[in-house]
Amino acid sequence: MVDVTIIGCGNLGSALITGLAKAGNHDVTAYDIDESALERVASYCERTTSDIEEAATSEVVVVAVKPDIVETVLESLELSADQTLVTVAAGVPIDFVNAHTDATVVRIMPNLAAETADMAAAVAWDEVDEGVRALLADLGEFVEIDEEHMDVATALNGSGPAFVFYFLQAMKRAAVEEGLDDEDAEVLAAQTVKGAAETVLRSDRSVDELIDAVCSPNGTTIEGMEVLWDSDLEAETGDALAAAARRSRELAEEFEHD
Image 1 (tube, rainbow, N blue to C red):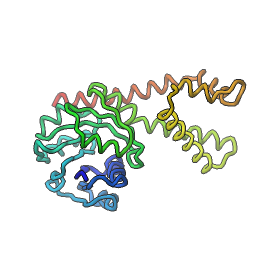
Image 2 (image 1 turned 135 degrees about the horizontal axis):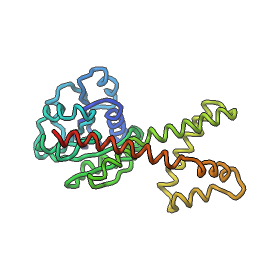
Image 3 (image 1 turned 135 degrees about the vertical axis):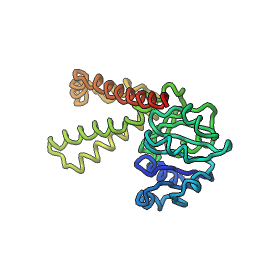
């Protein structure tokens, strides 16, 4: 049982807390200065606290706050060299965090699907941390990358869920326009996205091969795919990802100037 504190009980922090609680392999403490935020996650934690000194006693301390208050939190934390400090804030470099702590620093970019153990995460570290690796494995899938690629990972798996939600909503609305019940359309759209993603992860075939497998000659799928192939969807998706990655780099530059 690994002792973990999550600092910050917003959307992402709450997702991490919930996912870890469901996994059952961690003793979870939640920290926030907002008592109502602590109340929302209390049932998933061994303890909640608004005392930063109590929050700093765990083996692994996860700072899950917005980038603009990371430095304030770091200045309040006194961690030792035998502890691990994990940051999840977009654009905050490992070097910046190292300058504020004696703990081993790990940088991750998870997403909200941590709540259901379906998370996609990227992790960067100077040294592999087996405790963090086990923590991430309990929450979903993760890849180990060089920190120089963290901005694009932030855009892909950090911002990516919103892009997928948008596409899912578009499919749902189109089905409703064709006469399908709203709730039925949402279930079918969501399960279709989930199933397609699982197929990609579990299949030995490439994405192009999977598209071909669904597109029977003269069938319904190929008719719809012709519309997508003729559209600007791929370019617009690329632009969305590039914009998110660019913003992550801008945030990183702000910390480099500090």
